[in-house]
Image 1 (tube, rainbow, N blue to C red):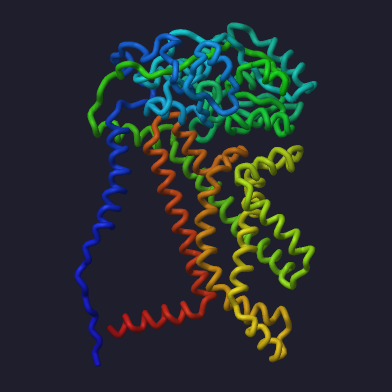
Image 2 (image 1 turned 135 degrees about the vertical axis):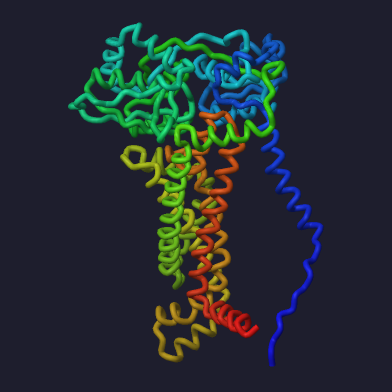
Length: 532
């Protein structure tokens, strides 16, 4: 008898249509709004023609009840309150790109930063202006651990740099000539070894990540001038601004840099080599933005700035590699760790079970970012290990705790009579577990296992807090150069979807190999399709 395949007409689903419209709207509408605005990366001809009636706020009283934002780790609330005692709210961001985007989208009203970063941000955004009055003058400093004898050596090296050289460097890095912003090679002998410098990677022009992942900027070149005088080489570690001081205090870096303004509070934690005058400035919106552009020209311009210019696509590739490395190693080691711990506790040792329950509760109950920072700055504080290594350890502990819970729950679903029957047939305890119990528990474990893998790859997005340049961090670095959100953020989101799909595919294949019922069902389905 010949089988025929029946065809059913497609069902019209209002919910599906609504979901599709919602997704398209959430993607296309921001694209039109983002790309319909003028390009944001610096263009002298554009800014020359831009028309603005000045800053939106011109007096401190105008900021009453408004929101003021600053970088995490920048303790300047009292400074702002000394001028505007009735500020509505303070908000904090991990990077300058996020603050600028929040200001442009009216999620904040003013952004606090130093004169170099503020001036460059305004030059690159015709719809932003500097607040007419500076809050306070200060000085930039390189941070050293409290009481470090090396500070005096670096202070002496700094004193040999002429004022003309300092001014030339300042003009170079705060100017508009991008072709001049090239880092000198470390071509001196370096007889006195190599030191580590912790620098922020999103604070252009002081320190930032440029083309090819190179760390560059005014601070970076100033450090190299001193290093040449001391005949040492420098290994620059790029990280979040908020992590720099902790990195220096833990001994992982000799000095820290990245637009750090010396304050009395910071002097209590670290010592400084003061190297250039600074000023606290506020950035506000322009009361009338500059030139309007056509709708589609900025789309290609934004794409070119995000991926093509300075070969920034390479940054995304580097981030993908780091994210995959951390995720895959954490899955492998976490699976092994969780299963081994379960096997050690399987026979009900009360002491082992109590310790395990406490550790699982501790790891699963702690925010992952806090766990990583405890590992990096406290447990491995005096040990020279990379942030990637610490990230693998942290996520291995987290995934291992989840595996322990999953295996324990899966095994509990298997009837105890199965184990007793195996014993009656002469099976040893281990043989009965692996051949009878575990095989029946795996179908209950695998769906949760796949879900935890999806959650793990997304959780790795926070490893930038321990100086790891993963996919999310690379997106932040690109945004710090372009001051645009759409393409970097959407690209990162799409890549995470793809990586999740790839890992899920491999786990699905593994599930087919270990689940005989699914193999039989799949084989039966293929035979039916062949006959039809």
